[in-house]
Picture 1 (tube, rainbow, N blue to C red):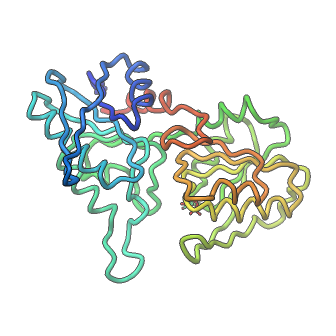
Picture 2: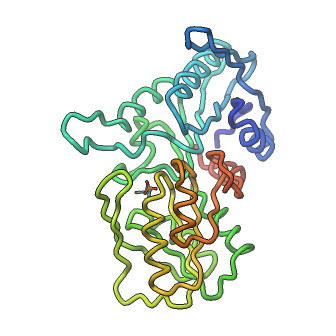
Picture 3: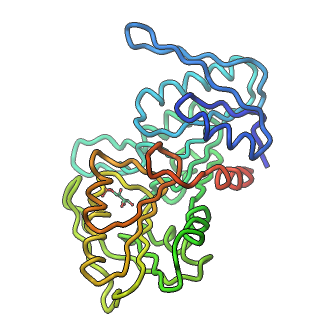
Length: 297
Ligand code: R5P
């Protein structure tokens, strides 16, 4: 097992990095950042950590990527033998092929760059649809894909009357997460079939012969971005006679107005984990991350 001796967080995720450091008994420090008048940045870390982990959730990722690379370099220059990256939300994983001719394969590029600067990786519910494992993104370096499933199931168990609950995912890719949430609750689960027509435009078909009348439906998805997927699915479930529709997501990327559009479509409650700051955050990922860290070889 490889345990970091110090977690280096950033001001935008200080509570989350501190909670993880406490959970695993590691030291904690916030990386000092400075932005020059021309927009360039400088980071500063204190000496002394041998096995540090840089902690940063990579939403709105472009500047954050530069800063974490600088932080890793500074840690090595100051004595670290190995540097880990803990990114509860890992950016650029969705573009894993060139969907249209001429597009960059962002997942490949980010994997190549980060694997030059970090020795091991941990993320939660990374979007790896066509890539088998996170190690494959990071050139075989030890990489753990943790999951928020247990934390989400725990929240459902204490907040939702679940005797007649069905957990549902919008597409086949959501099946592992949906099943991992439903199993500990002993709840039924389903996955729908989604076709994407554009950034905000999807069509969804509910499974054949599903009688959802009077059922409490809990939608679970790894990422909510434009909200289009949840809006469409919530509308279908409401139309199918569901008694209630609740929504859970690991990563609340939530484009503008997504929250309101989901509510208008019938989602009564929307709950997210704390990888991306949002008013719907209600589930800490500290425990999921602490458990996942133990899986590093
Ligand atoms: C898709 O594969 C993902 O699991 C999410 O369903 C998707 O990213 C949600 O995107 P949006 O909120 O823009 O529909």
